[in-house]
Length: 295
Image (cartoon, rainbow, N blue to C red):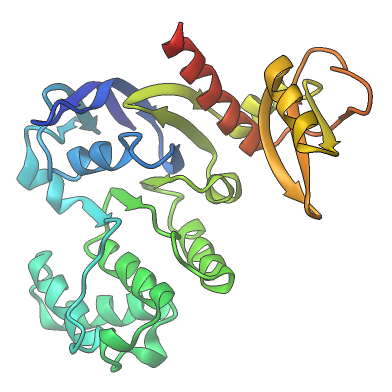
């Protein structure tokens, strides 16, 4: 269990990146959702010992991640949002080098670990290829390989599927799903589908504040029978709906605007009830937070 208590962080330019964030994260895949600039990366960097919080603590099985940085790094696997590689170095050589840095000094053991991780991440056939020739998805899979060195107890992946094509995204998500059973894996992202497909628990963060936490299925249950949709035939109709109803989101469907609305009862003519999804939860949480700040 990872226990995060009252983490705060304000940067020198006055930006309050975290405002008293507290979370209890069990083993398994945990999704941290939020828009760009929400504070997700700041939280991940604090857990990864790269940033010092102003206040608060984070503990994993009795280990203080904030104070015991050297010990934390021994049990940490981290794939940051911007993961750099040596472009002229073959994957197998760089992974071997990183394994030494992780403390795997026995050559035979290191060879076994490196080969197993390259197989696990489906990079074995490309192991001798220079990393500069890897696609974006292959680099991300290599990033997971290095994050899994030395059997980490905490794995953090920050915006891992941003910019990947659909095929590479699926490969990456399938890889993640296989490693998140016996360790804490935090998936920080603004892509709702990633959380829906992978995570048994989730939280939404915006402007440094925790808006919601729980199991996706239980959160969705509370929203069922409260989501309605309608196609707005004109921009004027869409604007009127936005003024008079609690609009969750608007999507283009076949070139027309489909408006999704939160309401206890049918909000008007032409509306039909529809099944709530995690994207509704996400946008509704952000909308409610914005209105609370305005008030």
